[in-house]
Figure 1: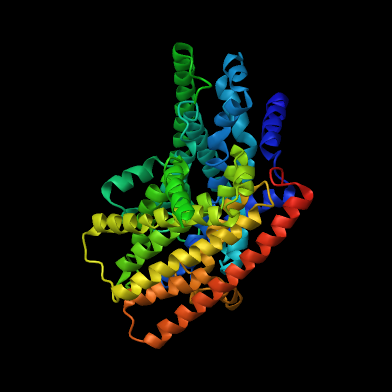
Figure 2 (figure 1 turned 180 degrees about the horizontal axis):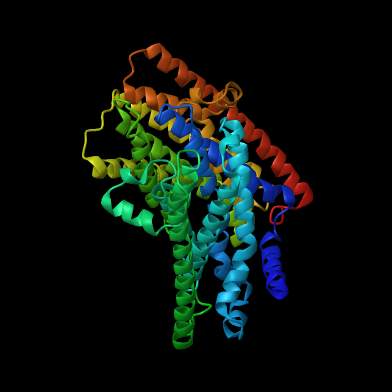
Length: 259
Length: 257
């Protein structure tokens, strides 16, 4: 476990390397907060309401995309650029462990970003923060971020097969904004859109978190969280399968470092 | 003029081959239009489809400018062509202006893409109140977007973290210039900032043109303020260009800053 934490921290430190503290805070706190303000104001304008609680909750969860999609999405591409990918592939260490190491600290940053975004947004838009069941909120947040990071790792693994990661990551981020039900109900989407929503991370967590400000039963919350956990496991399996496929392709075609 | 046109042509070709630019130009307006359509669906606004097309197109247009025009100087530096452009007998400003106009011109097709997306979603008629005024506003849009992009591009010449600032600049402009909703929704202090940016006035003109210009005086006033703020922006560009030029020559930091 000690080795796991150490390796996770080294990896995370490598990611932080080019940034100063104020730049890191601007990128992970200020910019996400502005994003939240923008979508909440847009919702206030289009839905003509001053009660923005459900939008603050939903959009605060989406703030994690800057880390779980844009940072985790390029982990393997970055390893390739730094010339480490060969060592990772040849290492006898489990690839799943390597992936989990890469996701551990980003997941904590996601939790922090979402929490800070929610608190700041809550104060800014007068959300009744006292009414929230914080214990349940913490559980939902944790499960949601694990799901989002697993999804980010699965997307990141695609980086071993293509050089179009900027295009993919930005598209995925836009898809998450539209189809996770953060700004308008999933029921409003067409049939195929509801199908996409079901396989995306955060859809169930956002629904569960929104329920916290409404009448809810524990059964409803647990059902949604279980769905999210299962989805996270599926994404980790998909990420592992993509790595296996990339490994085989690299052995066959010698293209590991080509893309 | 020939240099300007050649630079515009070259820039359009260069931008098109970049995957990120293709995302901003094609995927972004589609996604924006789809998102805004669903957001405005319950708004009860009579002419909401026109706003969806305009807002989605403008957001995508600014995205293109942010991730291309503003980063062009950094890209030239990275490829090692910045000193060549700088030292060539043609004015450096003219080359950069050509690049930015080329990008803005190409990026305007995102408005067309958002229009086609909305048409595909609901097949309904999209009403434009005053097409001639809209055309005039679009001409002004090219000038004002180019001037703001040029201003930011020069400022970012001094930094090596252009990609960080490109990401940070996208949303504040969308928020403060009223791309998605009128600036009257913002707090008063934010509205004051908004009114200093020429883009805000262009967006206002575009909205007026879509609604139909019934009060020509109000249109002319906004048009005048837009020209004035764009003029101030251009003077500012000239001043910072001189300062940066001096700094680069004294410190020899063109390729390293």
